Image 1 (cartoon, rainbow, N blue to C red):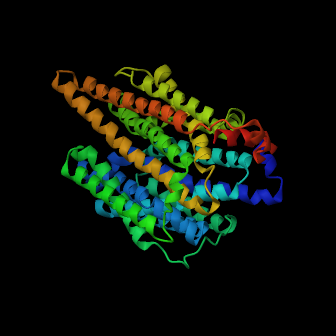
Image 2 (cartoon, rainbow, N blue to C red):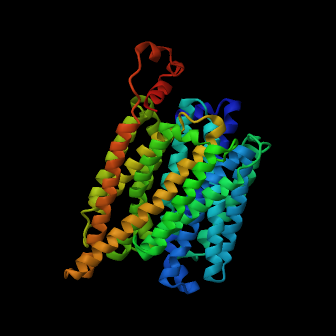
Image 3 (spheres, one colour):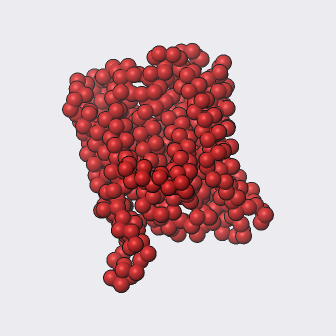
Length: 498
């Protein structure tokens, strides 16, 4: 933090660091919205008379739109300007938040949540691209990524706490109204402080067909994923939707290989660091989102925590990520390399998930649950920043928006798939235990245990994939000496790891 503040003394740097705070504020608003709704769902169900089946669409509508439009939004930023797309996303998200808070019936709320997800995709796709282009120096980029990671990771657990406070003290509608002053402030500050950019332009035409194909594939694919929890993996809706999504993706890839100005130049997929880190991120997010969802269910249904107490239980996670974001992870990356820090973070998160797989009906918060959430916070806080550093390290500036979209898609779609996977296995295990004569509480806990073990297995696979695919081959000593990053020892460490 001291080094970051010292950089603000230079007038030329001050503006971009303040701009970083603005885009992170917008990111926080969208991240909060992915979890803040969870603890308010019972109140929403009572007020708007949702059935249990329809209630899932309050979450799923946002998730489907968010995941589906990220690639399109990221490429739009490259073509027409990232600030323009960022501000448009803020405007859409803020307006949709007002509509959510005022929704008189369930279908208005679901439609508004879909629009919210679209606005979140526009804004979020531009945030990482703005950071990458504004902070080209490895040392400064590491600091900026630390701030971004705190918002992206801690914001989810903060959302649970904020949702509990607002729902219990005011009304569920305030979980949406709270976005209005934040969104307006971020929009005004964004117009003033975020540097304008022209984009590469659309003079050569826009790949509208490719845009439609990839967006339709994402919409149908994510819809099929979220339907798993209701219809099962073998249902016609899930299998048919998955097959159609794959067919559309195949048509999209064939089109992109033939045209001169594709929305997604396929050569970007040749960047091993981008693709492999996205796979690792997907495995990591499966464990993280699974903990948010299943951990919340355990605390509320088994331990009988209220909404506020459930949110407070995640404070060890949130505070740990906050502490790491103050420069600790960036310094570790500079000293040890991004890959070493990433592997340590994944291993620590695995320990936390394994601890959660041991909780029972009477497990006290101290020490087991506290240590589990502390370990998961330590692991996620140590993993996301090096993952982002590795992912964006080889991306050309002109394709930063597209790469940002790929990074975000890997997180959102993996989160949806992970929740569907863990939720389905947990439910199946619970049914099997109940049929075998276990008590209802014992059967539910057994389902959670299996889900946490699977999540731990995902992070272990992430460790193996990272070690196998993200290592940098040894280079001759002369090449290392002449590498430009050697002018800054911290940058050299990052360059070698990435």
